[in-house]
Amino acid sequence: MKKVSFITLLLLAPFCLLAQDLAEAEVPRVVVNVFHKTFPKASKVEWEKKIDGYNVEFDIGRRDHEVWINDQGQIVKHKKELRSSELPKPVRDAIAQQYKGFRIDDADQFETGKKFYYKVELKKSGEERKVIFDQVGKVSAINL
Image (cartoon, rainbow, N blue to C red; front, side, top):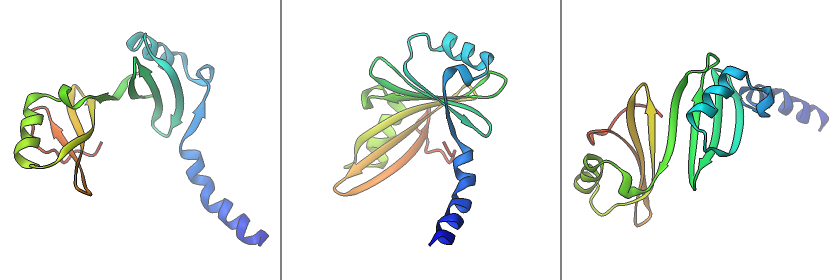
């Protein structure tokens, strides 16, 4: 039994090292400064170290946000929770035309490289689809 536990621990250890929760004091100043300058009203801030930088989950008002910042302090990606009414009209129109009978259950806006994408969770009588749209309502193959 000890052998099985030890082997399991060895197999799972690399996955534990991929992401690590941090206190803000453990994050480089350049990263923290960029975050606070960009999101001065952030609350419930949680830092995590990733292989390629830092991930920060936080709230502004009652909205969930998540931002990825690299080691140089550059924001790589920003995810923001949206109400369905806040989706751009071309995205709402595309959903109405291409996904008749589905309702919007969840919507997030992603900003990456000055481009915006919208990840929308659609539901219809036990069926669920997650679709990513670009700003003009075109289904995108980008992996967010």
